[in-house]
Length: 321
Image (spheres, rainbow, N blue to C red):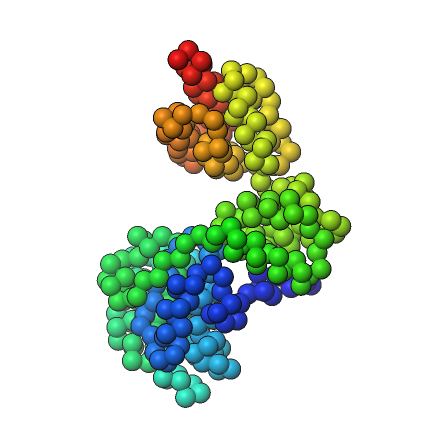
């Protein structure tokens, strides 16, 4: 079985992590002093939180990092029994290999129940002399204040376009891929600052063999071409509702997209339309309303067509003005 690229090319050292130089430089100071506080990594998916945590452990402990670091996913093990059992048992044992402390890396900590978080804060305090906690989450607001106050908070931001492109170029050269420049730009666009999504999309496209072009990228990543989404919206703004509706059918059928997938791409495209800022404000407001209704269980086709109808009305008002 072929190795998953996201693991194969995961940086082993802090200096190899791309797009988060400020954070890695601060973590480097902890490595240099051989000490660190409890840490809280917060930010969107695919921005390097797990990678930084593992690289930090490897640089602190060297070859013995596996015995002094345990990784748990709180979305799978999120109850109070896990905190009182597995976490507490690991935290209370002494570090091995001459290390001063151990690390418990708790991924997706925002999935922990409030009861589990309340139990965790006491464990963090009681065993801080031999154990440090590194918590990773997408939504720091779901972490209770007593835990946040015990941690040094690191906020990860979506990766810049040039950082994603540079890393993908490195993987493409290492794997000997024949990828067109347009396809590379398509991968960067699809990723939206999420390196994990970009790498996985590249691997899926490469598994088909042959040259990787734009068609392969958008077909395998479950994303419609931006120009097709824009064409649908512009047709509606021009008053041709039936043409816009037909393009919506083509997008959803050809790419196999759900209503939520389409609405996300519509939101990204609004800012590229040649309309006034006030019209963009109205469209964003309407898009948010439609997205909420779809999430709550409304019929996605009816809601998307209602959005197209709203675009038609916006176009009509512009022509009247």
